[in-house]
Structure formats: structure tokens, C-alpha cells
Length: 354
Image (cartoon, rainbow, N blue to C red; front, side):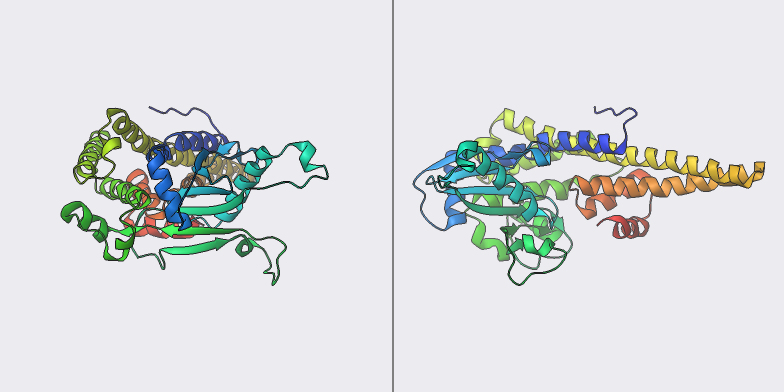
């Protein structure tokens, strides 16, 4: 059980992110620990044969010493960085630029950097995988994100550009249901069924989908563990990640990873409410004192509490956004934690979620 006591919002977000990062990418990294899957991925992304491949990692002080999700060097020339996201992030070119810069810096000493000898840099190949359960189909499966799209003013001939190639494997509820119940892959994705990257997306999408159907009357922890075990068995029986899903260690890792996410939501939502209420009450008292009468203080407190709840909900939405929780999951959590109606929750997320 994760317990937070008297943390400010900034400290809470740091804590949440550290827990989230510890488990969120665990199964993703486990999938590609296998050399043959890593080679398969490199061949798919490059469209060419691979002679040599070396696993690597990139981290950057600018991003709190976080390591990227997956990186590897192909044929001692190309440096691949692959990030996995559960929600769309327009800032991926900037994030990945920091990762590749850190990787280059680790390969070159200061003497070379400031000397007359020409540095030799690995050629970057940059990718992002998007997964999730969505209401509407993504506009395209394959696309690109550009650093120049983030510039305040567009430039015809920018002095710098970063291009990140994206694969959007978001799926609708119907598509995921059809796979779980009928073993039918969405027709639009048939061309990707031979790669592990697709099956990783199908696996995590199935988990996200099933979790959202847990009844409020059920014991959430028990229900989630049951779902995870059922899906591990289902995918194993269908020949997906058989080596991984036959391992008790990996199954325990999956259970820990996705069970922890619920605790993360709980912390973000409740800490946001607590901070918002505290600030709202303080403002209410101040407002009442300014009026200088007892009735004014009472009214100020009442208004402050009401405003505090609104501020708390806003803080919670922003917190979940910051750690990459999809909009529809945030909406469901607001209904569950704060008792908002579906319409109220959707309107709140639309208002505050960037």
C-alpha cells in the first residue's frame, strides 16, 4: 500500500512518477530483453537486415536522470530510441532529443568535444509507440511528430529539426472485444501481426479495456488480479509471448505493474483534492475576515470549501495528465472518486486536461 503524508503537489508528482516509471515499462522492457525480439524489432523499423545489435540505454539529467524505454545500437552505426506512451504527447520530439543528446554525450569525451578531431556520432532512429483503448480510431497508424511543430513561430528553414516516427496502435472497445472473444485482429492492423511490438500493444490494450469494466461493487484488487491472470493465460494459449507468460516471475511482474497504477491514481486524485480544499478554505477565511462579520466568515468558509473542491479536482486532473494517464481513464476516475456524473466528469476533463 502506498501512503502519502503531508506532501506538496510537486513532491507528490515526483513520487508518483518514480513509482509509475518503475513498473510502467517493466513488461515492455521484458518483451525486448529477448535478442530475437530485439532483432525482429530492428528489422521491422529499419526495413533491412541486421548484422549486429547491442542493447543500450539513455538517460538525461535534464529529465531527472530518467532512462528511456528502449534503446539499442544496430550495426554499430544506428542508435535506435523507442518510447512507449499510453496517451498522445506532442512533446515527444523534445523528450527524445534530450535522450539522444545524452547518448551522444556519453560516447564522446570532453577532449574530443572541445578539440580539433572530428566527433563520430551514431545515426539516430527515433520512434514512439502509442497504445490504449479509444472511442474513435486514430487518423493514421504511421505518422511523424516534428520538433518544429513546437516552435512558437514556424520557420521555413529551421536551424534544427527532430523527426520522431510514430506507430499508433490504439484500438476501440469493439476491436479489443473482438480479439478477446473471437481471436479476431482488427483488419486494419493485419499487416503488423508478425511483430512483437503489435502484440505488446494488444496485450496492454486488453488489460486497460478489461479494467474499465470492473464493477464498483467488486473488490478492485481481486478483480484486477483475476483479469490479469486470465489475460496471461489467454495470450499464452494463443501463442503470444509464451516464454514470458509461462514464467511466474513475469506474471507477478505484470500483476505488480498494473495493480500499482490504481494506487497511483488514488494518490494523485486524493492529494489533489486535499491541496485544493486547503487552499480554498484559506481563501474563504481570508474573504470572510475582509468582510469583518461572523456571517461573512461562515459564507466565506462555505464558498471556500466549494471552490476548494473545484481546485482539488483541477489539481487531480492535471496530476494525472502529467503522469500520462489517458483522458477516458481520468474521466472514469473522477466518477469513481468524486461521485461526478458521466457528463460532469467529461466536461471537467475537457476543461482542464491540456
